[in-house]
Amino acid sequence: MSSKEKRTVPVEAIELYNDYVHGEISRRTFLNRVKQFAVAGLTAGTLVEALMPNYALGQQIARDDERISASYVTLPSPQGHGYIRGYLVRPYSADSRSAEPSKLPGIIVVHENRGLNPHTEDVARRLAMANFMAFAPDVLTSVGGYPGDDYQGGQLFRELDADKRFEDIVASALWLKNRDDCNGKIGATGFCYGGGVSNQLAVRLGADLAAAVPFYGGAAPEADVAKIKAAILVQHGELDTRLVEAWPAYEAALTAAGVTHDSNIHPGAMHGFFNDATPERYNEEAATLAWTRMVDWFNTYTRS
Image (cartoon, rainbow, N blue to C red; front, top):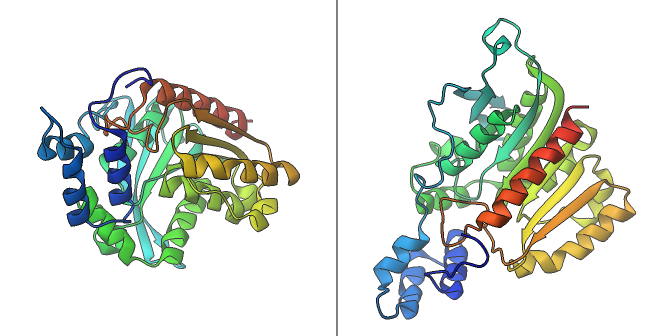
């Protein structure tokens, strides 16, 4: 959906859905409140159906695409929940079928607050198609992994210790960086929760992280910004007012610390604008530009 196209669902209903998926309101409250936005020809049931993700719509690269090699890998996370499982994807090329494939930059792809859903896995495949090695960890591993339903995934997510969740992702990043088929440089990207984690990884890993591209995620604490050595590219939707209003302070802190950074505030775009599995939030124009900028950013800072 471009910023010029008319939405079929009121913006207020989309914002209500955002509150629901972020755990700020219960499923029952969401279903009760969304009824107020039902108008002629648009029932409450139709509204809910339109707001829920349709992962078939968001698949750009098939799971069995012959141009990629994908598998699930479980690795140790001693400071986290003990272990974490994730989705590892590499591009196939002539030498990647050999005993010593080319060393590629590694990109950690961090999901939203609902676990490793099909959209995040597809983003990992897209990055592989751009000639990166991508790893998408599932922080729900210790409770059985993504359950196949975003609401249930969100409930499981909130049961987990936040510090251990983060340690699981740190373990994933360092594992990726130290793989024999990685060139020793890694980047991080993520969405919402994953965007905030990308900023946190930049603080925690210092020079071990070459670049980060957080999508609509919370900023790193101002007191910690000086620890960042990665090049940071922030992606926000113009209508995501809370994060947009917080950006100038983060930008000032990055500038003061001498951190290489840039940003895109995408006109007319909402929180979640990159997720093409949620058509009412998806903004094709913004998502296309954000993708191009991200790939260029990672090419610049993880290949030299």
